[in-house]
Length: 339
Image 1 (cartoon, rainbow, N blue to C red):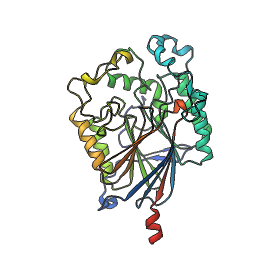
Image 2: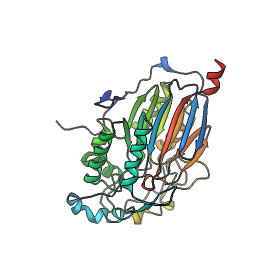
Image 3: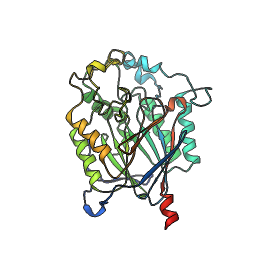
Image 4: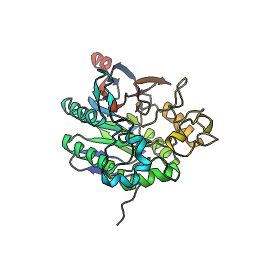
């Protein structure tokens, strides 16, 4: 029996990790009449989110843009498609110390940090790989098994991209998710999945083509209707006023005219007409969601924070250079003192 790529509303238990994937439950029993009170403090890589919606502390270690380039003989027939990215991050400088490091060393050290911090969850938010190398994917899975911490994976635009390979972005993403990346999703839908951790629902949505499809929009809308506290994990940052085209999900300037890297990355050029109506509607729903605690993302390799309509979006430094985020979700201190 063939494994289906895009599972619908699965309810499964990740064996050995205790991390459950939850279906879309639109019952009004969980709805909150008012939006949550949310306070955010940032101290370098440490992020603290306080809210009256949080009942128990939750700690996650957020990793994006490791760009592992490991490969072996199995990848030789794809070298014409992987050569550029295979040489892009062979050696890096640590984002703090500026000492020489590498993607592999940075990833291992971040996993050990997550273990020492007793993280509840590791969020792998795209471009963990520079291309879909079998060796690199197997190595990451083995390291995650060793660390034995629940994890969530959402793809980035490089994870499934062999540069110069023919096909649309949607076709290539589906192809290499099926052929290589599928085990990282732990039997959950690669394009959209929800995970409950101590009362917070983490939504992993794949926007690695810069676009959102109708199923993903419906999925997000249904999750908002639950009234549960939500955290959105996407690779490409949501558009924020004044930001560059790299904030490419829902960006009104995203189009063929602003696509400067399609020749370099040897991929189809962005469409002349820009984003679909669905992607713009998703952007609107995200920043109007009353129960969204925050958005965490990567892609631009630089730590930033934006507040759009009161919703914080935080981007991490690239893990290839040792970057990560240590995110704590905590009960509202003011409410605790007053009670």
